[in-house]
Amino acid sequence: MIGVEAEYAFGAEDRTLDPVQRLEAYHALGVRTFYLAHKLNSRLSGADVYQSDETSKGKAIRTLQAISGCLYYDDHVANFPLIGSSGHDYCSNTLNECGLFAGQCGSDGIKGSKITDCCNYALGDISEPNMALWSSMGATTFNGFAVYPATPGFAGPGGTYFGGADDDGDGVGDVEHNELGLSTDGERVVRRAMELGMIVNLDHVSSEARTRIHDISVTEFGGYPLNALHNNPRARLIGSGDETPFPSEYDFSKVEREYVRDTGGIFGVRLAPLDSKEHDDSGVTVDCARTSTESAKILAFLLDEGQRLGYSLDFAGGTEAVFSRTQMGCGTSLGTDWIHKYGTETARGLAHIGMMKYWHKELAQVGLLATYLARLKSDGAEHFLDMWEDSERQSTF
Image (cartoon, rainbow, N blue to C red; front, side, top):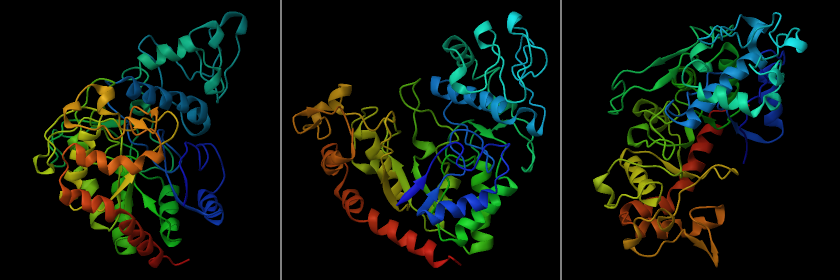
């Protein structure tokens, strides 16, 4: 099955192409699922504010959103208010301050504080010193999500807000949320995808967008299946600096998980290096952060919640999967580490798709009860086919 996951799959904000025609072109090529946004806001949807601003990844994503605002948004549709605490206007298009390089950056440029970064027109043009500086400011001055303006085509304001201390019953405190939901074009694309019987997923978009997609699914299509194709339950995550993710808008709240369960969708669990809260019913009694013990607890929690589960490995180059217990130096008393080696090669975890044949052996080794293992081994593919058939059944194409 072919899917599309990219920042500008439907064009940047200043493009004039019709995103519905782009979706139809993808469909004609065999694409059956896609993302409305990825890590950054798109023409179609606000992106989830990925990871906590306490981590380097969280700061980097906020910085990239700020840079994206200057390169692709800026004066095309609105005045982009990205001014640092020192008064430096990063998106300025007036006479710059670069000495011999004096001139105008124009509406597609970003102005650095070094002479080598006088005017940049692509991400790759920005020097490493300035990128490092801006990334360090991603939680404050250079948080592009927080300063993103109200945007033509979107209802409501731009910027961010923090959820209540327990706004969805998950027991999770404040996380930063994107104010941008679906744009008018985003709603058009969602409706057309449902008409075409495509697999509609809720990953990477803001909570506001997920709510609107659910509204369209229920009120206009009688409960069209909604999916999480690589995700985890927000309530279970225990963050630790850059080691394991804190709860964030990316991972699903209880309400958002119910969107998936109640419409007959699939919850694809991203087998990533996480740290999970306890789930006593799982049978797993050992805590070994970033390894199979944590994923096992999450899998049991979601099954007990009534989710139809699948595995979502997200093997994508630099994307990390579950680490081995041997590598982390914990949980070794449980016995054989099934994902530390592949043949004679040291893999140090679930390094590639071929190692999935050992995954259920590893889950059993760390104590996951047989009742859960049986469902994980047997049900996922059938659930996926049921969901896909239901999507096709509702198609008008």
